[in-house]
Image (cartoon, rainbow, N blue to C red):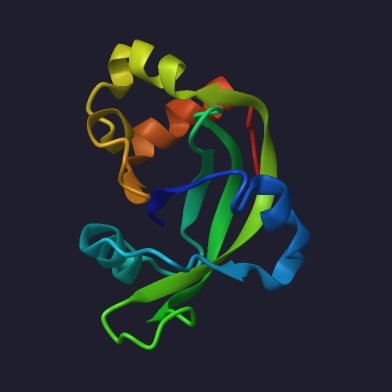
Length: 140
């Protein structure tokens, strides 16, 4: 299993929207960045990801699971753009802010720290464990 981070503006698509989709999940559509698209092409069913609220909140608020591998993005007819489907797994007990992540020297090499604008990004297993601990997530 691999780990990822999915960023969204809460006013556009927030954690509550993701939860509302239930087991059916939702396409992670609208991504128009080649690097983010390429990361989605690497994803496999069962991979886990952090759901990150950008803009003012700048925090990890939930955990999602990939439920469909890369396929054409339904929001465009341009064949270059693909997306995965994800479903909500659980909310974190304590949201983990970008400031907290930046303050932890163990996370200094995290993509979120180095390239906070990238909407879909990989997370190492060590980073995943550290953030889950900070978030109060034991098993989910």
